[in-house]
Image 1 (cartoon, rainbow, N blue to C red):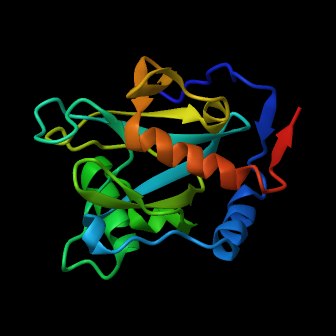
Image 2 (cartoon, rainbow, N blue to C red):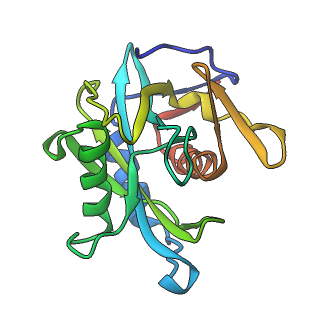
Image 3 (cartoon, rainbow, N blue to C red):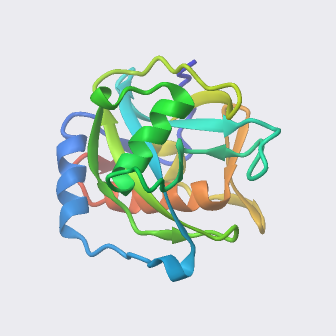
Length: 198
């Protein structure tokens, strides 16, 4: 399930120390925060972990029958619920509901810039670290597939014709808001000592 793909660029992301370094970078950078006038509040979780000496990131393909974004690759996440203590809580709750990822296994590292979507949402992405590769238990009503990709996959520029510009990964196509969020994460990772440009 956790398949290594050839990196399109000559760079490495060293797993050791990445979580701490990324948390520091996310804490010190100014973050774009958008209010509800730009869209409904929502959050996603970007779980990263080490596998075979490389940093992988967890993704899912949404079930085909969903009203919005059916069949598209995404991160676990969804709309803010009034019962959620925070947007971070939203991301953790949705990851548990969608793919069975226990909150206790997740170390939150910080939030990236808010991203408005064409469907009327403002997404707050939360970077997270898992100490071990997860064993997903997807909710079949919402999730068709859970997979991972080496984070280095997203260092190269995305390819395609607008609006379907993105990455082919493990038989899936990563584009749209998910692609934009991944590119934002890579920018921050490149500022850490874990990023080695070869």
